[in-house]
Length: 113
Length: 113
Image (tube, rainbow over all chains, first blue to last red; front, side, top):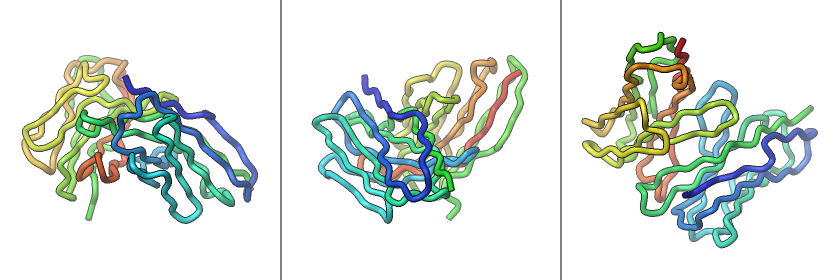
């Protein structure tokens, strides 16, 4: 059974700091891994999608990496801003199961001005 | 485009009542999903569908039912509501989660008292 874990559960950093969020998964049979952002009381917004054959994806100040063999992904946020404060969730699309998305519990990020 | 639309946004049910959570997408996506999110627990998959007329159970299907008669709509039915079903429910869709990102609705906050 696929399990997705995110560490840490919460993180507080000063504005301007570079930071890394971690995601690990137990089964490497995945189509892709996605990183989402969730603001309080809101739905999820897709940030980055990495296909299983890719190593990383970049969008602006965000960079996500994928090491399928070790079951790990990281989300790197450069020069963090208070507007980055949100919960970040990773999810894997399971191979041969309709691409079901299995989520981690999320990392709640707070960027202090 | 409206994307993924969920109704209602909030609802309070009494124990034993029934209701249907509505989900509609206008992106002609084949894949649709229902998740529930409990505090600190990430998202758990309730049911999913890979196309009209096809549905399958996720991780936590007990107490729920779905149907997919059209590509656009994927309603979630709660029969005999229980306090354990108090949660935030999210509907999501994707052209194909094997290769493309998932889009989420804004959620329905349900309280069963």
